[in-house]
Image (cartoon, rainbow, N blue to C red; front, side, top):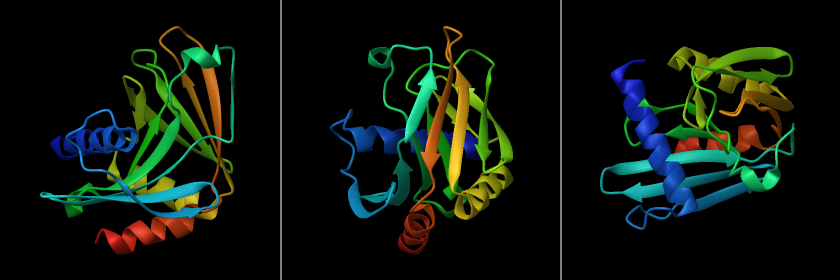
Length: 174
């Protein structure tokens, strides 16, 4: 993993923290658009503007207690620097099994992501771009992961509204 991608993960984590209000020092995300199953946000701070889109699953399956699972969500973000564009991040709502992968299937096109704690990321910027291209063209996306307890989960997302919200953050965070 490159130093740049490590920094991007820190920025993406900070955005998620700001979205869910866990740190009071973070700037408040401003919702710019809700389009079907996706929402677009921006955060303006001294260091610059960060934009992201997000969605929650339309369906989640697996043999787990829903009360023991946290927030499940997907993000695509643009950080304040041009090098931090098009970062795809999946939040599982649990800690992943160590050294496990997450499989993303977008209308038959498969991607393998690596995990850090309760998040999953693509290996490279090229993989992020390929995944975003598939999301723009796709209708449905499924994400399969394994928790630290060995429980397999499948989260299904609608891609309805993805392209419009993604286009908005592309224009807002240049």
